[in-house]
Length: 64
Image 1 (cartoon, helix red, strand yellow):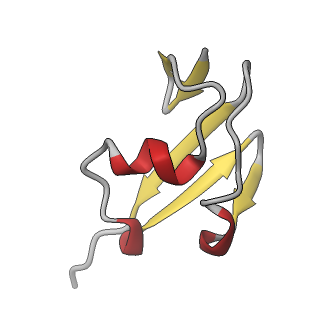
Image 2: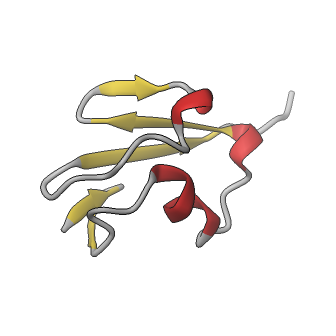
């Protein structure tokens, strides 16, 4: 299991980009943190999620 935004999700072994493809996140407007480290967008395809990882996905919203 991988903890994503506080919820356990069975995605160990998948790439970060494969997981994000199953969500409604706008990948151009998010930041992803894995175990306390920000993952650059260019590494989403090669980042393989492991058992016990803690992922935080933060969406940016515009306004003013």
